[in-house]
Length: 204
Image 1 (cartoon, rainbow, N blue to C red):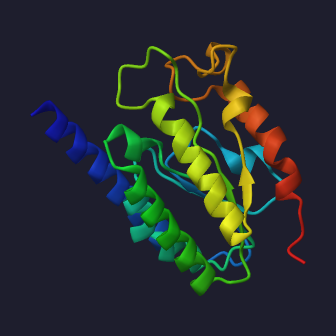
Image 2: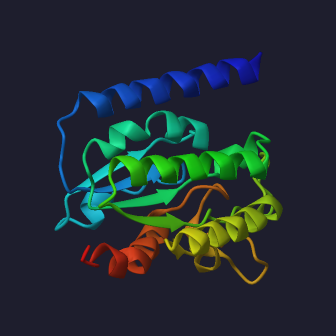
């Protein structure tokens, strides 16, 4: 019953956020952040105040949810899209093969509906060793390897964030989190520094 109520709350929040996204104006040429690992915690428009940025990450979402609303993203004909999705899929027990199938469909849709958009695929971030959820590095590491291979096949840019946030044990560094799952501000500053060169790339 507890999980049912929690899932209803998450579903309602995702629907609320999506309706807000769709009610907004079209912003042609924006840089858009999409996924479940990129939420309001990373206030990207403040971290990159010189860019036109739309945040389309929704906490708690899965790849299927991203796929269902990707047309709201492509309607902006964005200059760039930064994807970072998959961690919640793993936590819910969704198989890697299914995640990759959804990922391919997301990429296909973006490339078909907005072919001029440059796509950056970011790895799933690590989690803490003692995190009491379905998230685990043991599942994240092979998924990241599969995502990297997918990018090689499609000639897309893959950004490996995983090693940036790990400590000597290979788990999420406690310096960047207070709950073993979400990043603190210093983590987002490191993330910003890492992707800044890609933010400044031209689409020529």
